[in-house]
Length: 66
Image 1 (tube, rainbow, N blue to C red):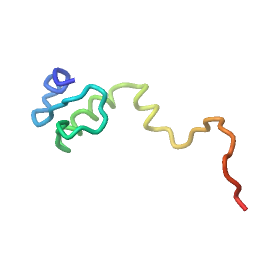
Image 2 (cartoon, rainbow, N blue to C red):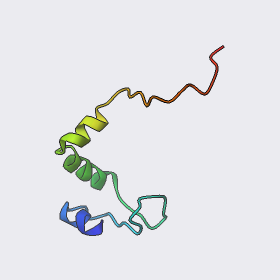
Image 3 (cartoon, rainbow, N blue to C red):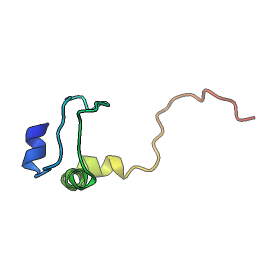
């Protein structure tokens, strides 16, 4: 992940864990995250996913709206 961050010129980012879960050693800046998002937005599948406003998962309702 750090190699990819370096390739995107994310100079203030360091990933300590590959899974992306909370880890105090995972560091970045808003500017670097914007660089990542700019790259992600070049991918049509990513644009489709983040552009989805509503998605029905087909799960049955688990609560009563009385």
